[in-house]
Length: 100
Image (cartoon, rainbow, N blue to C red):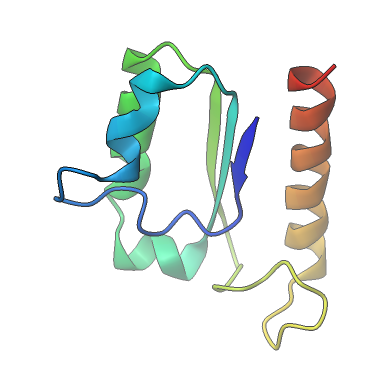
């Protein structure tokens, strides 16, 4: 299982871009993207969805509306409790399914 509560930098134009490694894994993925990170790179989530679908990898890729970069840690200045709790619950669900 692989999870990212950041989602940024996973799609680049470089030959070693993380998304290009998708076909080499068997992991299930959770990519939780803050709304303002998505606004900076709105096509990345689409590339990730297409890449994981082509590799036949289960992946949950979601933009967390109202969440700003760094929204999950409780000590963050942009902590968003409802969206953070949603992300953490999705992570626990992923682990429960993928690591059982």
